[in-house]
Length: 535
Image (cartoon, rainbow, N blue to C red; front, side, top):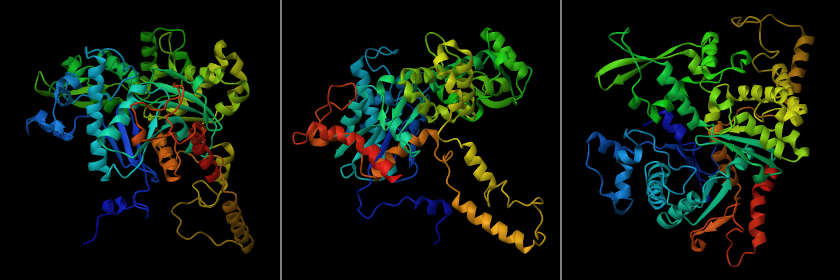
């Protein structure tokens, strides 16, 4: 029986002849876990922090609550994972896997010990599904590479290592800088990596594969901040009308604006519109919103929703100016949370003066929030405008012409593409697209075009690869690269794990009794040197 096309494409994931040489690559974020095997060009699975299928069935009353979780008796923390307490008032609400502040009590009154136990139980469930449901592999046979943020809480790293070693019996775990991994996917070792994720936006300069961690800068203006701002705009500016009575307008219910609902609106409807200076400078927020409403050319979108109290269908009208201007909160800063633009320029200003131009000319944007349409182009506009108008960045004003992102084609690349034969807009394109038989050409013209065709093949060497990888996958793909090259950061063996993990904030790294410290330090440079040789 012939296999369908979808099944044939799934067979493209092949294992090596060595069987267990591929490593497990994990990118554990606060809202998504990306997993797969090293040597592959994309993650095999994206696991979101929604309820599991079993917990969803429990909520719908389709099956009783499980009393066994991951081979042990279910306790109060496991029950909480499938209850309203863990996921807020709405049981289908997002539950962030972790927060940046892992110490002390949270806003629900849970102690630090309780929070760590809940984190451990949830990680156990998710990683168990990764191995036995998604990747279908034995955790005892494969080494693990974990993509980590430089400012990730140490308690989070220790919990990840504890679950992998004690519950899954992984042979070894390597924590590697996610910013560095993302940069290595571009074939360069120097650049300014901007990670615009869910909890925060972090900017890290990297020179010659050495992350300059003391110069890292962060801001809370990221995906979660955008969701909060979007929620406020929807409550104040977007009325709901009954489908049967369009004139009956009412305020959107608080319970409808869950994190999952806001995430859907954010990913499907929002985009970053070009900068309009006259509509934003030196005015209040209400006046700025009025200006955006008057100047917007985007289409209003109607979203069908269900009203619980009325037990009827409703229509939520989202104006076009909210779709294109909700992201303004990421570019407008204040004393409590500076803008993404100021965070980037501050990281560059803190760097050594001779590295500022190479960093600004080699920027890389990664993270889920960075996937908003036109976000990167808008960021370039904001950076250039800040360099020209803000006296705080006066010392960087001369570098405005050097600003470039690594995945943007240069002018030379565009010229090569436009003149190459076989590309859209090239010389081989006919003026009449419907002409099946073009007129005959003289012999001299044919010979000239043959020479041009040969020349175009020789000149097809571009300074930028373009947008090959998605921003939210770049760190994982970098981990896949170093896993395929059998290189990684400091490696923790299961037999040497004592509850602590290596971190740049600690005095030293974990080393085996027979391995000198300088060998461990040298292993961190293997990542860069191996990839540099391959390119």
